[in-house]
Image (cartoon, rainbow, N blue to C red; front, top):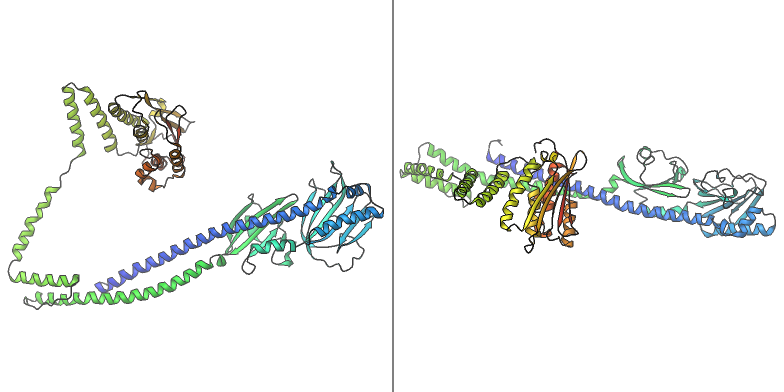
Length: 606
């Protein structure tokens, strides 16, 4: 198959764009699907972890609340403060500890140490054990400013008490330690420790992830594992580079990141003596499983589609090129001098039409009219040359000057003044190709426009301006002030008043910014339209091309004339995102529009 044949080109040029479009569609679809899945997964899992952390916080707060019973139970507190030797005091102590132990099914054991008598009490399996004259267990003895601390997961123990405890089986627990203080001082009366089984966390955390596909860790402030999938790692430091890089030194309380082909989402848990972090790992393969399944189906469909398109393309190409080859044979016969060949019809499509025209052409040649036909075509070639003239804008400007001169000759200076103002506006908008102009040039354009409006509205308003001299030679985007002033005459001008005014002021805001205010005393913008206008101004960006093209739509929606969002969009295109445009109603009546832009000292190429 030769490359320079129509058949080959048709096959290539049909299949190649089709293949490119299908692959591009699949790539874009897969990309947006994965982005959507990633965003949805982050949102859903962030909310899920947030709820989980709240449940864990509630659990810790409940345990902390139980530890505060030592203060609310006056008999317990007095016994601990004065020492307890008699059986009645011991019974009260046991009753309070038993209440703490039985308040939650996941509490493993409760340890109490009284400083007064150096007495330690360990309540385990609802059986109290007491030792006197022993030191407090080091982990329970809190020496920090905070009276509460939370110990990460560890195996339960007898708190250094050497006497045997029947049927004691160590199990993973986390412990809340509280220093019981002599209120209002911080002097320690005793130390209370509450061991909590990890089943309390399991009930909460198991609902936060898919145990077959995902991983989850609950870490303390030092990176030690409080809870996770592998019970052998409890209490050990998490050995993972992603934790040291993205979580440990971060100041944010929540966030997410991708590393090692997985999505990590974390949420901090903070409280009295509590600084834990809940981290969830979602493999990217599991996260994008729906997108991958869709991509596999799309690939299968693409292969089937390509086979179908290839088959149809080859059939169509043969159907199209066969009549062309037959027509070529007719032409070769004509070339040899055989003009009376029998040219048969080849259908009613374009090739059939070409064949029919070729037969007609041969008839024409045989009738010796080809020369007249060419002559007629030659004579008609020059008929298009008369359509090239058009009105030159310079012609219109020169005509205005002639009319103005005639007005002076007829002693009608008002007409000349109005024509001059109109000519200035035409030159400013038609001949000045610059995208930025000086503030003075922009102000002169507004002056010319206002002069025409004074004639229209019979001088029922005044125009004044006040600008710092240093700002007149600075630069700003073209055609910004006149559309704003025009809004006053279109929507704010009160025909019944003769004291209307429009005022433009400009002043510096520091060394590199300036403010331009355009205010009037016309009709105020209705509240509903003003709110809608402010929303459009708030959401306009430098790349908001639709905003620049839909000026009439803005006009209908906000009733603000040319469209202040359009003006703001053009300001940002030239001056950057730091440009600001605000609209407010004046208390005394009227509207004020404020522009804040960076001072442009030199003309730039836009």
